[in-house]
Amino acid sequence: MKRLLILGAGTGGTVMANLLRKRLAPGDWAITVVDRDNEHYYQPGFLFIPFGFFKKEDIVKPRSRFLPRTVEFIVAEVDRIDPASNEVLFRDGRILTYDILIVATGADIVPSETPGMVDGWRDTIFDFYTPDGATALAEKLKAFPGGRLVIHVNETPIKCPVAPLEFAFFCDWCLRRHHRRDKIELVYVTPLSAAFTKPVASKALGALLAEKRVGMIADFNAERIDATAHKIVGYDGREVPYDLLVTVPTNMGSEMIERSGMGDEFRFLPTDPYTLRSKKHENIFAIGDATDVPTSKAGSVAHFQAEILARNIVRAIAGKPLEPAFDGHANCFVESGRGRAILIDFNYDVEPLPGRFPFPVIGPMPLLKPSRINHWGKLAFRWIYWHMLLPGRPIPFVPARMKMAGKRRPASEAAGGSAGKTP
Image 1 (cartoon, rainbow, N blue to C red):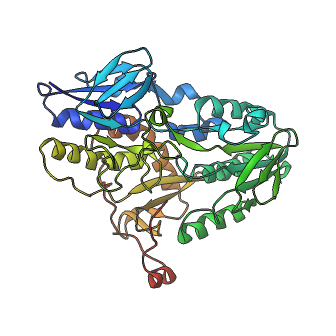
Image 2: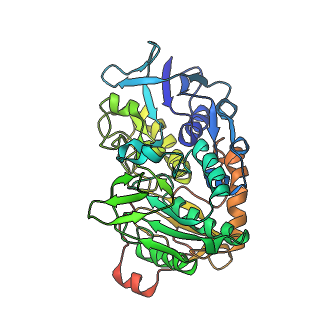
Image 3: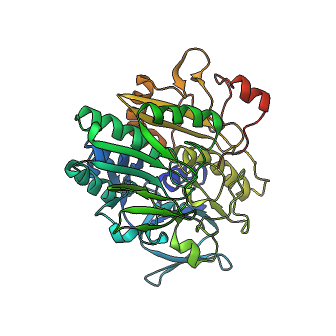
């Protein structure tokens, strides 16, 4: 019997196990999934923890619950991959061979990559990209008397690129609700030249920052953090003082990828952006945040990739050419506060545009515009995630490949042609 081995039981790995178990006969293919623990977090929920809407126990379930019974699940630490021998070596000395390998090991924050960041960690410097970080930040915000709160993106790429903006918007709203906004200055610091990577969305999101009196410092690349003096020091000599720093540290792939000698400088696996096959190994594929493909690192991307990757793995097994079908599709809600959210839908070649989604004219969800229905959509997505996305069930009207129906390009952008690829 042949083995398909999936490293990682997050969004991408879980969806792939469900899709491929339906397509590969159990008598011919054993499917094994490996992860270092049995805790699956609904990561969009991290944003809500610092503001008291969720606790971490509200957004975690056992990974094993979402895997088919005929899929073997192993909780273990992987040491490295040996692609020359088609083997995965575990920290405890075990070795597992594979015929096809799917790398779905995600990305993690690495605060130690920035000198000085760990010196103030969980004291005056916090993250909200981890369950413990978001929980610690919730306690800090309760006790924060006022001053300068800086929301900082260290460098890109990061998981869910709009999450830091969401935090700024949400923070403004919650401070206003508790009559504390006038005591706290909000500042958004980014290495990008604007609020987002593309002009139409940047204009809309930048206007929202200004409306909410969130100052923005752009083109800022942090050299180090001076935790004693409470300031971020940039390579260009600029300094950003803070009383409380909410940062998105450098995001990197699994250390296991580095130990295997298979990753780029950020430990992401070089992956064909259209077929999702490894650029170096024909029987290795990758999905989600573990890849280096030039699209957003977000759960929706892993979901859209999964449908295409499942077909391509079946084609590879049958000896057929792979379909270059993944178009970089990303789709996400951006909480804007006051019970409203923005929806963006884009891919490699088309930036987020205004319009209606999923149907032209009738929508019902507006694109690039705050609305209550988008906020409800984001809240509803938690149920959709557990009950439809992870089990690999189709989500109606949201295809893997992006559709232009309902989108409209502003006149100035239409004259300029394609928006280019999304980083």
